[in-house]
Image (cartoon, rainbow, N blue to C red; front, side):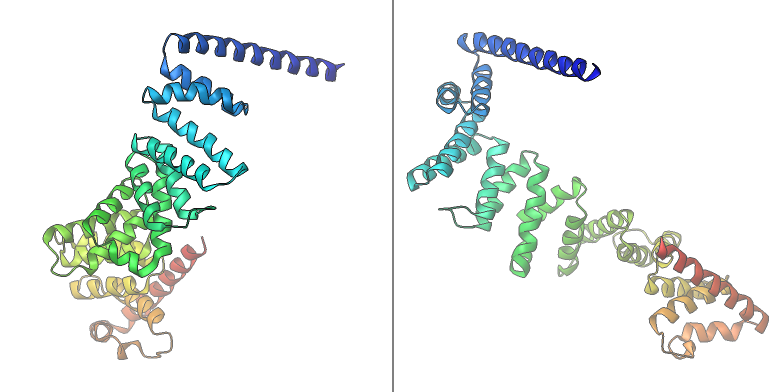
Length: 334
């Protein structure tokens, strides 16, 4: 009995949907006859979904003539189906012409689809990553996140030659746009470009520091180490030893041996916390030189430090170094 009731309710729901659809269609039809272009386009889209292409084309052509880019895009999709079912150069050309017309009218979906056509190719259309890039950039400028992602794939696919072209200001600006969307790969790409730039300006150094900070905040350990060194040297930022230690510790506690060694060197130079200096130096040097028995042979800082410490201080510092090493190892397992 329960099953019959459920079945009956589903039929009622289906009938209700059909009634709503009919009412909606009737309302759109009335508005379209009164000259509403958007309604005519929507009717064309609905008919296209029902595979009533001849009727759909009539409504869509009416809207296209009125300058509706969405209608032109829908006509392109219908032309694509015709070409897929019955390929010919004429059908292909008609499809591409409509798609490009809609794209040039500012339709996001048309620009994105053109990017895909040239990125992946299809019968009668050779792959052309340069063309794909052009259309994806237009789609990206219209707000398409998918276009940003596809552009990243193109740059990765094209390799070193394309990477060199990224140095052009136009592409640097594109990377800056993608960074605003939270694209971590773009942060790394732009940082690399700016780092390789000769005769860096103060603005370049400032931007590099900001990029490393974004990357470090996103969890990149290498960037945290770089940012720590930037604050230590004052490149693009004001010198700040406390901020340098803050970011170096983020990297050091995550297992970055260079950062750990640098922390130890900073504390050793300050001379007010030999215990901390010893712990970080030993942990960093042990990771960097696992086969060296006497770490003073590879670190004058550690040797100078040991000469200043009593045997009791060294014993306590060794315990702290073991605790620090355990803490780092534990954090890496998470």
